[in-house]
Image (cartoon, rainbow, N blue to C red; front, side, top):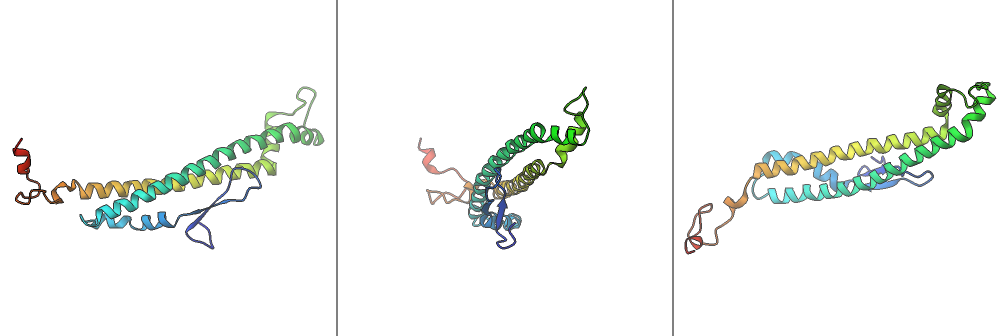
Length: 183
């Protein structure tokens, strides 16, 4: 969460030098704070609570799709940074350090991996992928909690037909209407 705006999630973008996205989490956090109400839900409160959870679920699904896109873009950028390092920088560094041979002019796999691990551009690309994966895990956890709360209200509230008034006022709620007896 953003330190200046506690209800804002800062999400890095997959492309380098593109400013991060700011995601408003206010409605989702408000819905999440109402999860405890599932324990004391009543027939009057249940529809409003279900609507709140449904909206939060919808909002989270939209946010997750945007973050997943950034995650996929970041993975592509990570592969590009890896390729550039291996092709452009690794051979020169290994040759400069005397770690190549006539048998293996591009150095051993271990040496290439070591140079790659120390490359700052590749490291930055990896870090961005890791950050986006962690944000996705965080958001998916919230999505699951909201989904479970919605389902919990449905289970506690159950079938609402017994609480609805019969169109035939002479019939008790939950009993068949005389309308159906005519046919």
